[in-house]
Image 1 (cartoon, rainbow over the protein chains, first blue to last red):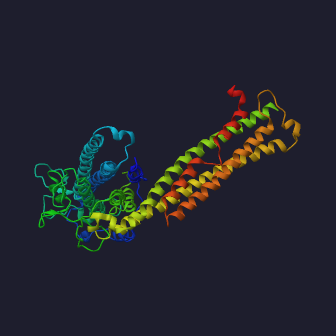
Image 2 (cartoon, helix red, strand yellow):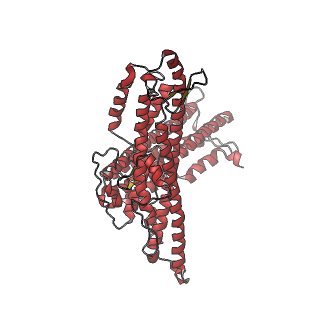
Image 3 (cartoon, chains in turn yellow, orange):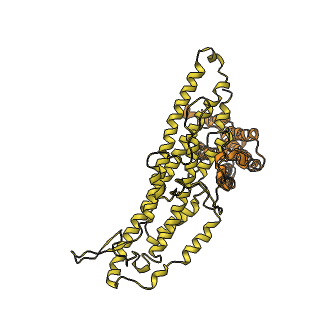
Amino acid sequence: MVDRSRTENLRMEALDPATPSSSLSSYSYSKAVNTDFRSPSSTASPLPPSVSRLWRPAAQRNLRNQWSKLAALRQQWNSAASSGRSHATSLVNAYLSEKYMPSMELGVLSDMSDIRNKASWKLFKQQELHRSKVLSSYKDLVYVVTQMVRLSKSMRCYLKASSSTPLVQFSGCSEDMNDPGDGGGIPVFAFRSISCFEKLAEELVQMFIFELNLKRLLVLELLSLRCESSMVKRFNWSDELYAGEYDDLSVCNLYSGGASEPVKPRLLVSKSDVPTARRTQKLNHETMQVYLTTWLVEVNIDSDRVEEIFSEIREEMHVNIS
Amino acid sequence: MESMIKKFQQRFKKVQREMERWEELQSRLLSQFRNASAIIQRLQVLKDIKNYGSLNCVDGIGDEVLMRQMASLQKILILMNKTLEEFHSITLSLGKIHRDARQMVEGGSNQLCVKKLQLRIGVKPTLADCLDGLMLLHEMHQSEYHLKTSLVSALSVLTLKPNPGDLSALQQLLVDQPNIPIEEVQNIFNIIFAEEIS
């Protein structure tokens, strides 16, 4: 049990769920959005006043719906990310135990024949299990982000052109090229136009898209963990991690058709677009620790800003979405 | 005389409630401490870009991860100080309970002589037992509060030059609460509530 302490060093402590974060950019962001309440097209409303009066409640209903779904998705993200982290930690611990098994001091047990092999085999099987769990958490994260993207594009409310009924109806999809679905840029609730809501949603979803991409890299690394003896496939960035992954990533704009592989991960705050080459190094204990920490801290998600966006929305709509 | 002892016993019940709150705070402080020390131990690893493996292909990742962890640590330290303030309020309240009790005995018309203070009725505690007990409990918690305060400031000093041995020593002190010996505390309560036990 000599290496036990080494292994346990890696165990991550549960942090406060609201992982503190800081981003200098958050203030400038909110200012930019606040000063631009109305969309540029607010001058001419294509809807006649009578229709416009009916448009507002329909648009309000739609926005309330989409934003409360966004809030729920964000919770889903949190729980998927946190179970992913605990599976990843178990995987790393089993991997390190297997790695150190040959040098482990077994005391009286060393008399038992084949004990080391049996233990290694068991640890290997454990890793297999944790690998599949990490992958399934990743799938959950992808699902959450694709839904967020879909929602962030469904903020508009279009006039439904129907000749069969004299009633004015609205829908989520555009039927008339001349109808932008934003009610001519009028405020939907108190101040903000549809395009303001869209901007906030986009800012929000962008963070999760970037973080998903970074987590993909971590998942790839974790799934490729193997001891010299075992036959675990080493994944490349261009490998599809599960069937249909690329379709999902395309929805999030994370698949580059030109390169036929997912977009390379980068930081939301980073200015440079050019990724440095991926260096494959010997994976050691410290690197595992860095991977797990990186999974935990979600560098691309500024949780203060996320909170701020939701509370701005709550204030505007006068409803509680959490 | 007996009614006075009853009043004292009520005060001890109040002390017990405060001590239960102390225990809650203790476990809160411990988990905050563990989180903080986990981060502190990671910091050195996070500072070395060599440890980032394949993450190195993400420009600026090291600085960002490190910055986030520092921010988390900062938040935890602030929370720890808040917890300390609550510990402090408990010591103040224990002090007040003791002071009030002393005034009840010493003050006013019912000035009691030493003899009366040490008068024992059956298994009931003497008034002196009660006063001493309250004073001891207050002093224990007060010294423990001072110890905790210095442990927390030692922790923030360690952020700059961490040393796993020091961290675990600090944590052990925090767990042990050397100024509040359990047996002694139990002993005090046994004397005060002797009739309830027998």
